[in-house]
Amino acid sequence: MQEAEVKITVPINNNQKLAQVVERVNSSKKLITYLKACNVMAINRLGYNDHGPVHVKIVANIALRLFRILEKHGIVPNLIKDYSDYGFSRDDVEVVLYLASVLHDIGMIIHREKHDELGFAIAYPLIWEILDGIYTEEQIAILTGEILHCILMHDRNVKPLTVEAGILRIADGLDMERGRARIPFEAGKISIHSVSAMAIDQVEIKEGEEKPLEITIRMSNSAGIFQVDELLKQKIDISGLRRYIKVNVVVEGETERKILENYQLS
Image (tube, rainbow, N blue to C red; front, side, top):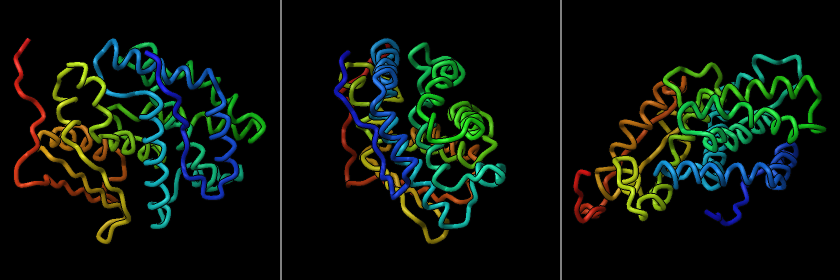
C-alpha cells in the first residue's frame, strides 16, 4: 500500500523548539516510512482503522488543543512540576505531546498486541535523533522518559501518572470521525469498530463554561454510541483528567443515516 505524503504539522504558536521538532519529523524518511508501515499492519493485515500518518497528525493537533485549554485553567503538566531544576517550560511540554502523538502507535509495524511496548525499541533512538542539538543530554534523557510514559499509557487499562500522558490518551480516543474508518469499511471489513466510527460526523473541542474542556460529538447514527461509551469513556475515566471534561453527544437528523444495507454473520 503506497500512501500519499502527509505532513505531520500542528499550530506552532511561536514555539521555536516545537517548530524545529516538527521540521525534523517531516524530514525523516525513516520515521515517515515507519508510520506508513503501521497502516499495512493495521488496515491491510488486521482490518483495523487508520494508525498511520493521518491518525498521528490528528492526535497531535488534538493533544495540543487540549493542553492549551487546560493550561489556561491552571493545570500544571508534570514535566514542569516534577523537573523544575531543568529549565523546562510549556514549550517543552508541547514537544513531549507532539512527539508522543507521532510515535504512540509506532509499534503497530510489528503487531497490534502490545504495540505500546513493542514501539519502545523503535521510538527510543528516534527521540534522541530528533531532539539532538535542541536540548542537552540530560534534558533529552528526561524527555525520553516522559514521551515513553505517554506511549505506554495511551491504550492500557492503567491510570497515567502524568498530565501529559492523560492528554495523549484522550487525544487518541477523540480521533473517531468517520474518515478514520473509511478505508477498512469500504474494503468490506465490517465490525462494530468500523460501523460505529462511520456514524461519527464531527468532534468539537472547545473551552467550556462548566468545566475547562467541553467536547461535543455529533453523529448521524446511534451506532456511534459504541465509540463514545465503550472506547472514549474508558480513556477519559482513567486519564486522571475526568473532572476537567464535559462530553456532549448529539444524534442529528430526524432519521438516522443508513450505514449498512445488510449484514450476515460469517
